[in-house]
Image 1 (tube, rainbow, N blue to C red):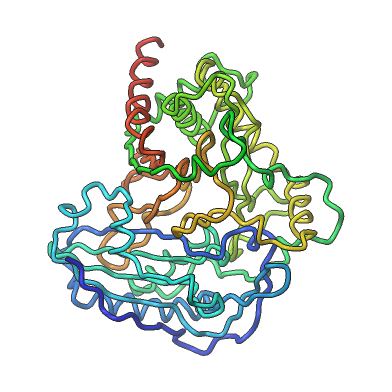
Image 2 (cartoon, rainbow, N blue to C red):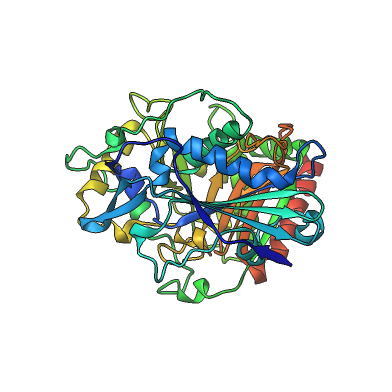
Amino acid sequence: MITKKPSFMVFPAKPTPNVRLPLSECDQRHAWTHTPTIYFYKPSNNYPISSAIDTVAEALSRALVLHYPVAGRLHGIQGGRFELDCNALGAQLSEAICEADMVEKYGDFTPTREMHLELFPSIDYNTTPIEMLPLFLVQLTKFRCGGLCVGTLTNHTLFDGWGAINFINSWASFARGEEKLNVKPCYDRRFLQGNGSAPKFRPIECDPLPLMNGCSDVKAEARMETKVAMLKLPRNLVEAIKKKSNHQGQNGGRRPYSTFEAITAHVWRCACKARAHDSDQPTMIRFMIDIRNKLQPPLPPGYFGCSALPTVTPTCFSGDIVSRPLSYAASKIREGIERMTNEYIRSTLDFLKSQGDMSELRTSFHTAGNNRGFFLGNPNLSCTSLTQFPVYDADFGWGKPIHMGPGLVTSDGKVSILPAGPNGDGSLKVIVGLQSRHAHSFKIFFYRDLIQEDAKM
């Protein structure tokens, strides 16, 4: 049983600028709902959990001084767009008590609807105006065993995964008593504003993804029940997949395929098999690209805001993904990455700026249990990788988290790739949402294909 205490607002510890900040086209592209992220911490004999809520509240108040937009609200403007109202209305914090042991109740921490309801604050998008919704909400849950959980909801328009993780890590550093941040936030969104020029390209990322053969819309697939699996990949299996993707390579002597390219290709192939596609079934993958260092000049190190844009692979046939070497699928993922040049990104920003209404172009509402936006499931996938992010640095004084990951996966085709734990040994975990009828087969193919291919090589 979980008992939730009333929430309260945490305000910046000092006066902050009362201004309205414009959002870039990159920010406007993202959903205005909240992304749930969860951190679990093992029991610690060196930290009194009774004072944990006071520690995180005081640290959050201090963090909001420098990161003052987080304490603000969205303000709607014309064209379905928003700007940031830095009005210091605060972030929301709450505390909960769970009478069960942490691992006994949540096992390997695979995200479920039950977990989302119990370990996160609730948001009513239907009756609360957007202008009144906090941009950052937190629930701290204490378990009978002494373990702790921090469930955060971050507004996706405010910042992307990189920005959210860095803010949470900064907040945690204040809780540890550290006074200085390594990088000062930069709030100048002009770096990612379209300049009003006619776009040189129409971004294919704004087009709908392929449908199932014989279907005229996504309604039937979108109604299917989904199930979530969390699959562990120790370092030796990660290396085996990379070796497999570079065996009989299709990269023409270019650099070897990366961990992301190889793992995502493996997931793509297993999904096509588990879904039992016809060989002529069109399929593609949509994934996010961090554009900070792809721009010329690169964004400032402390840029605060969304700096990720979606890209897609070329449309492929499931028969080719399944029957050809893994390097074929990896090469298609690389094509999506290499398309995102400085020229293409700038043209995409100009295209977004030219749109009269941004509402139809927003995606990933499903991260908050809202199914608006593009359907990214069968026969396709939507992948996010956090393998290069410091996701286990959120130490509030009671040690690094033993698990960090998404707090909710409700849509078919949603894939997250993260480090498996805080020791940095190269192991990964792959969290996949698939239709329930495909989930069991996917798990079998995920590991069996590795064993069979390893025997051949």
